[in-house]
Length: 259
Ligand SMILES: [Zn+2]
Image 1: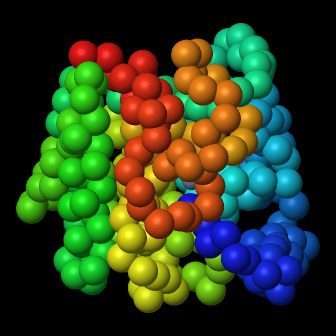
Image 2 (image 1 turned 60 degrees about the vertical axis):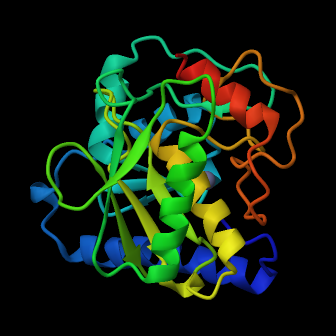
């Protein structure tokens, strides 16, 4: 989830922030002994993500996780599992509502549990509770969510991070074994965001944790039966003021998590 009013200056900073660790890595690598390098499968994993419709310039490897389109997270290990699972990935129709290859299994999707880290400020907690209420209010779907007060069992952790960059929050997709995305990270750089946009942003990120991609991009699996234009969809990649789900958002949710 990003701010819409990003400047070119911000874009440059954003690029440099991600580019810098690559350069640092490249420098330290030159000094390392050449015979102790582990096999690097990054290129293969990036190729796989491209087959899922992600553009190469929107795929960033940071530590052991990939960041896709700025706010969609997936661990390197998870991509490795998907490469192994998806013997025959095909591509790609065009349209608007998109989902990932993996959804939350019926074991977990009626009660997706969220745990909020104690450091999350009250204004963001309000947004998280509001976002849970939003998803719970969608009719005609088996999807349900709740906030838990102690971290045990399967849950999605919501926590604060900081980066001087133009992402407001980012989230993991469901795992290949049917569990909800493991975390939502909120950028404290945007603590002053209006409440309505906080609510939109968290509702959007929870959308990623249950398997939605961006409606204004064309990666993943098109959800057949959803509208071809949906400019106010919560799954657009830029933040808006919360004004409720669109009928397309509701339809897409009913389709992927039918009653
Ligand atoms: Zn997003």
